[in-house]
Length: 123
Image 1: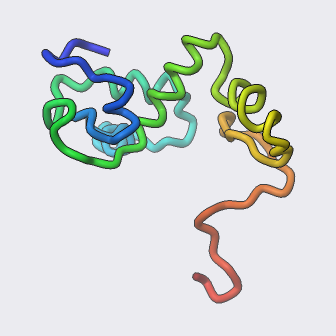
Image 2 (image 1 turned 180 degrees about the vertical axis):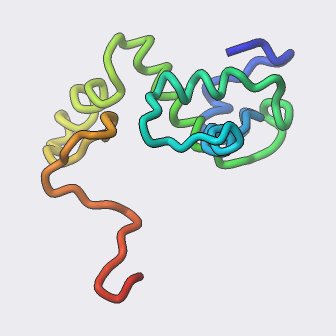
């Protein structure tokens, strides 16, 4: 990430007060869809920001790229994917055999439940 004059801390990412703009909006502004984009592509889109929306720690703004960057921190520090790290250090020790991070776009997940799926009434 480029320097923005003030450090963006892990706690800023966790609390959605980083000042960064969301990569979902950035990719739309680039005329791209998320289909086919890798995590590295998304991180690169965030890193191309020439400035922040607000100073770190100043304004709450829920953005998905906070989680993307936190996952990247886990990956670089642990030298494991977020999915592998969480399985080994969170889900397996808690006996959560059916819980996982879905980090491969084309991955088939048996019994997967989506949070925003239409039912028979379309809701």
